[in-house]
Image (cartoon, rainbow, N blue to C red; front, side, top):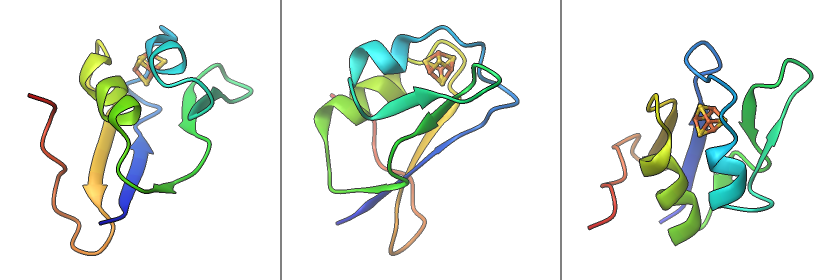
Length: 74
Ligand code: SF4
């Protein structure tokens, strides 16, 4: 099931953890806030790890079809 990736730029503190955890899946915008390279993605462990690793929980993963949250990694 396709995931939707969103980053709350109001929360992002530009740590870069998501860029390091999921290379090529996140990038900094001109304000040095993270944003997903692709808003929609097939399930991806690195993206899920990045969301779980964000120190301020700024990354939200939901199922694109239902809007339900994607469970964190075990
Ligand atoms: S891990 Fe979180 S705080 Fe760090 S750059 Fe990514 S979204 Fe921003």
